[in-house]
Image (cartoon, rainbow over all chains, first blue to last red; front, side):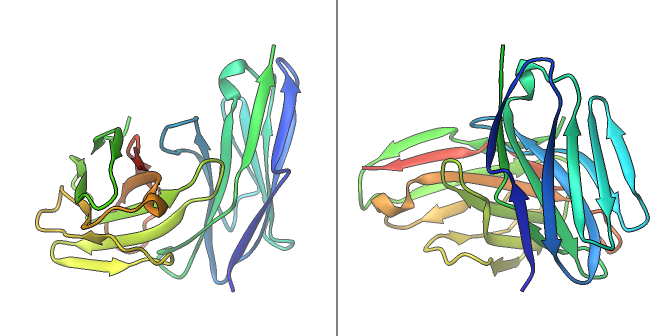
Length: 113
Length: 115
């Protein structure tokens, strides 16, 4: 059964600090992995996509990594801002066309001043 | 910014009422989806469509129904709402065809409360 596990479930950090979120998956055959940001009461928005051959990708202060061998991904937030307070969801696509999506439970991040 | 719209954003209704949640997108996407999300919990796929006149049930059993008569429109209907239907409903769409990267474009969500 395809599964995506995220850790921690939640975390609190001080503004300006860095943090790293983890995503472990057992999805086959792997197509790609996306990180989404979901603000409270809003729909998720894609931050970055990782394909099999990519190890690292950045989007501003967000940097995602992928280790396809260990089936792990991380999302690193640098110099956190209050606007980074949100849920971060890891979504893994399976299948040749990437049509089968498996969602992680998300990590809720609260940035405090 | 994604061009996908949901109405209403918030709805409070009594038990037994029939409701329709509207979802429209102007991106020409063939694939559309409905997800259900309880506060602080993960998203669960309840319906999806790969094109006009094509609808399928998702992973989570739902008493709702959907229709896809036009590419841009994917409404969700509850014939008789119950308190257990209280949740947030998120509509999404994605690029058509094989080899796509599977990015989902979400609407703002419809938060339903059934009393």
